[in-house]
Length: 411
Ligand code: LLP
Image 1 (tube, rainbow, N blue to C red):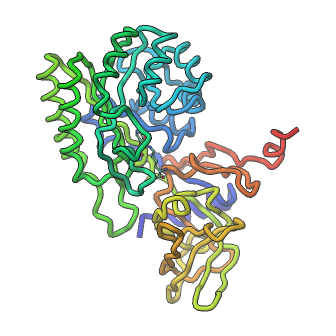
Image 2: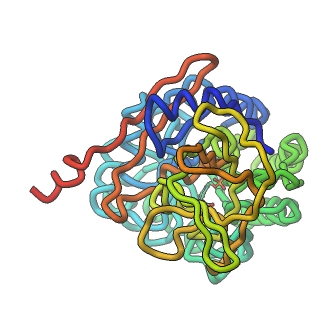
Image 3: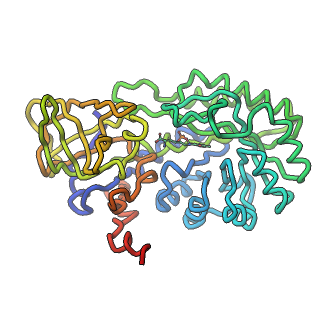
């Protein structure tokens, strides 16, 4: 069972209401400390772009990767500036919509280009702009097909065989090439590590171009299951990339910065989603525990069949006594896929859990990454609050959206 300070969570649930997200600053700081060997830790903001969280990361020396105009504005709102090298903010994408293009040009944000068209569009209006090339090395991996970002069945990156053409565009538009980047997927297993590093060295060799940095991308897995052994050995991960970096330094003849770009690794384990049990019922052989959070609040199980460990405790945080039961934990939304305990393709996956009653608290673990950031207003449900715990203190870092705010867009 994942660590759980039941009484504290109960206090937060009582004060803030459910559903709500709770993050533990100490866990975030501990994860960052594990990556300190890298020259740059660049947080993939998509995992969790709350501005208060970004401020915490900034205070820890972490830089950011933005993937949309909204994320870019969030980084600025959190106090990140865009000058200097390495740039505190890099913009990574496979397209540049017109508004984003104008803003990255205005702010001179380095662009990590995932398509040759991005280089052309940027080069035409902003010669000399700093760019990275995001290379699709021809293979990828992820915890789900939907998070595998390499190979020909992925839309991401500049295909490795087109590196030469991309370098030509860099030269044609006199773009300033900072470095090469590879992100083969999210929730990657480490059997791919050597292959990615080799591919990176090979791409630098083939580019025949000077570079100042390389980025490993993100993708580091975390152990969602208590018995999961995929916890990454960050020292080993660094050592393998450092060896690749040294080969690259030998090619270009000078020092090269090594960046890492994780999202999940930094924030997933710090976050929990709290919900209240609102019904417990049976249907034939099945038992269901229904809570007041749905897939609009935590989409990962419905989207990927992702596993999140769940705890039930009483409303005061105390343990629920008695024989555990096998139950499907589900939400309030009007479709059968609104189930937190499911495998890919919607196959129900009951968990053995204490028998919770109405009023008990449900805790969804490891929800700090791609939880709040992927939530939506489906079924006209307001976005839920986010709370940051730092030591003994906790602070609401996003309040609950009101129904008036939901309706206001349609005034
Ligand atoms: N860099 C790039 C270019 C990315 O596309 C991503 C994730 C990352 C870094 C960070 O990956 P991480 O370290 O967090 O695995 N919604 C999915 C994950 C989608 C990831 C998309 N890109 C999920 O909930 O598992």
